[in-house]
Length: 255
Image (cartoon, rainbow, N blue to C red; front, side, top):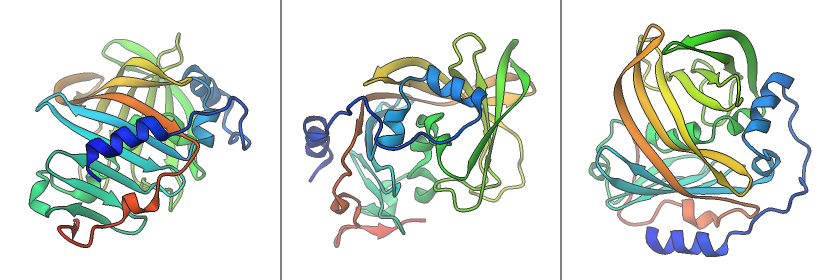
């Protein structure tokens, strides 16, 4: 199944949520709950089993369709020149490694899923969000939350750094300061991701734009990348396991 027909299937076939949560909400600190509440009915995220969206790279005008089962975090990315999949154990790419120009397929396969799913994803078991002293960025003071991870939290390393900067009036996420340790470099400097133009998706709000900046002190400088999102779908049924399985032909395990 190609990515166009898969996207069409998802848009037509995925079910929407009823308003009554099917399982209790995770226990979170009251300050963080205020942030979650400002992003909509987050019970829908807690009860969701599948998630999909379309991503556009604004720098080169390429498009990708991303699909995930939220419980297992199995995922698939369909682009014009490649497919990337995670079957729960291994990451693969089709038709070959040369089809993806980035430094690491394993790093990329859930990169934008993680950023796009903040703050909801920080309700996962093993994630601790703590309000700390306000932080100033580009001359504006923000409510500030540090994020910590226990071992074996899906998609995160305990050494990763995520700091959420929240608008004190709207209580919505405006920036994430981060340092990712995947490549084991000694660099501990932070980068900044800006969250803009929130749009409603069946009761939850997601940013239409994510823009990554270099960070110097308390100011952002050069833009590193920008992506936009559309066609956000949350579903109460998991996607078929076969969508995440490595094809028997024209696919390789990814580094």
